[in-house]
Amino acid sequence: MSRRYVRIKICSPVTVTEEQFTQALTASIMKYFGEVGLSRIAPKLIRFDSRRSSVIVGFAKEHVVEMQAALAFIRQVGESEALALPLKTSGTIKGLGVA
Amino acid sequence: MDFLDLHILPKVDDESSCTRTAQLLALSGYKAVGLTVPTGLLRGRLEVLRACFHDSGIEVFLRVDLTCSKREELLKLLRRFRSTFDIIGVKCTNHSLALVAARDRRVDLIFFSPATRNVWFDDSIANISNATLELNLSVLFEMTNHLTLTRLMKDIRVARRHDVNVVLSSGATSPFLVRAPIQLAAIAEILGLSKQQAIDGVSTVPCKIVERNVDRLSRSYVEEGVKTITGMN
Image (cartoon, rainbow over all chains, first blue to last red; front, side, top):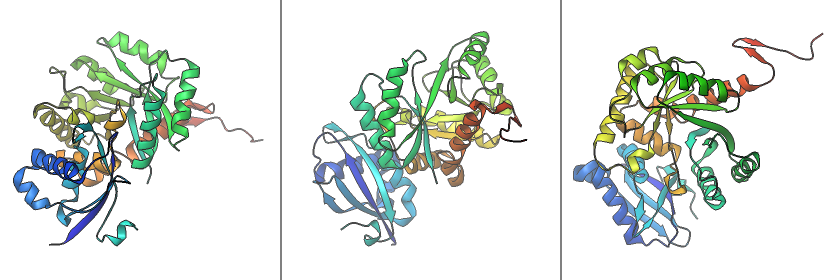
């Protein structure tokens, strides 16, 4: 299965943990696309940098639109309001330009 | 490609919230925004607001949302505000007002609130529409049931059937409601717009509206197709 990778910036007034973000993303996909959608999109957390609030998530190549929409629907991470902004999408992790 | 969000509703009294909104818009990749401001906002306050966005590299266009229930009232407001604001949006609260707003060439955008049950973007409005349909996607982030989604899908279906231009806006009232253009396009694509229409809805279509209005408000503009040219002997 061919993959795509997206670099996301999490904007939140508090520090977000890896578990909290994974939970929020999974809940968003489940709510709008269901369990079948979740298995098709197959999101996988590749890298989580809590210091820079930067995340890299891999997902199935055919579901870029669903992934972007699911990120848009995230309003809360953990207990606080949050925003997940996709900065760049690429076919390789190197292409995201992360050091 | 330049991205524009034509519907940002900043808290005009809260400078830090405006600055944060501007920073997030810049990070999302927007080049310009339409700021909905109260019609009686003081000039000094307006300059502070503009500066907040300019500091983040965002160009500002002023927008007014007209909300009324009668035709005469709308026409009066249009006469009053067309020359002072860059963008005019009309919130359609009933069917007859929606018809007037859609037909009037001074109106740039018409939008419908999902909370108003008795009016929606139907074929009769789409048939005569000179204005562009605006979809404020922030309603989806606050929705409590599937009816909002159904309404938006229906609006999109009608717009596609009649070839009406669609603008996608966030309608953000706080920094946390800002969404990247690619996210707005993705949501619209899921709701039924084609990929090209969705991308145009955050780039080409709003760009054209703003360019046309800046042109209209310039000193050299006389009427559609007629301009004063200076420096010619």
